[in-house]
Length: 384
Ligand code: PLP
Image (cartoon, rainbow, N blue to C red; front, side, top):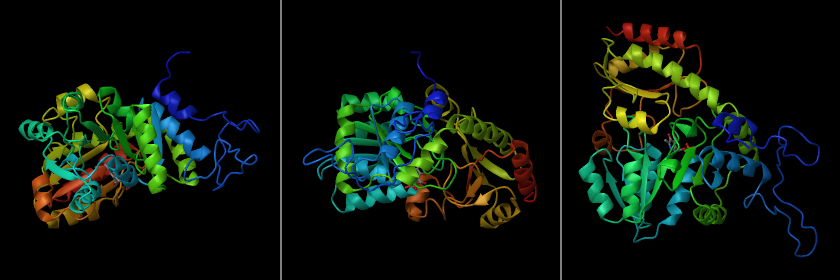
């Protein structure tokens, strides 16, 4: 059998797996519990927190897409992050980027404050800071590339090799790119996590998460923890997410085509100060992104010239962008990270991460790209 492409894996996950009625699309199993065949005769499933057939199809499909050995579907992306943190004991060091998703940052800082593990927050694009952190022998290094919201790029091959030399595990939050644009496990990472709420489901109607491991052993250890702490995903959410996954490849293509058009408009517009997108040759991570990614993704951010007044005016003038948190749905969203997605970071942490008051973030949807450009152009033109 020839090697399957991502589009085929995504579309055909669990197709024709139904043994009862040969349903082409796998049915949803909502039952919370499963009957034993007799005394001490447990079947493949006994209770849906521990295992669920619908969830398992999604987990297997995501693992195959990420080229991992084991997938675990969690109730939220945050639950997937929390699951990876179960690997840490109080004396273990966790190294994280200073500009990760605000909710991840809040989780890391607050669990470290409780003494669950030791924490080092660093700028991962600063090699000296990274070298010093890795020399301290962390148990786990957390990477977000591109980072949220400034799209900073971390060299995955390099950081994974460095980590391995010191015996550290590397976990990568691949929410922004999905396996369509980046497969961290093939570049040396041990764990990939997703907020499946975003592109993986892709329709802004499910909150869910996933964790995929490179090895079977690590996968089994974390699957044990997922059941133990009770964070596995629900059957209905898994069903909807699997439906979303089937269109992941063409959706990502269209998201990116539209994002590229918007980057071209924003870059050089008189109302815009700086544009952050790895496709731009001026982006410090451009060359690494070109090397380790397949496409530059559809998340982008930019700073408007002026102040909060311009931000308000710009947002009010937009027609086709909803002012909302989250990302990765078919619809375009605009967000003000400082007061929205990254509000969990205090002013000092935001300043350190480079999140200014005029920074805006777009999650570019799959509407007509030219109409999105027209809309953003009229909103920007109103500022100059
Ligand atoms: N990782 C990233 C990059 C995110 O943007 C988010 C949410 O916005 C999460 C993780 C957390 O995911 P969830 O909201 O599904 O818990």
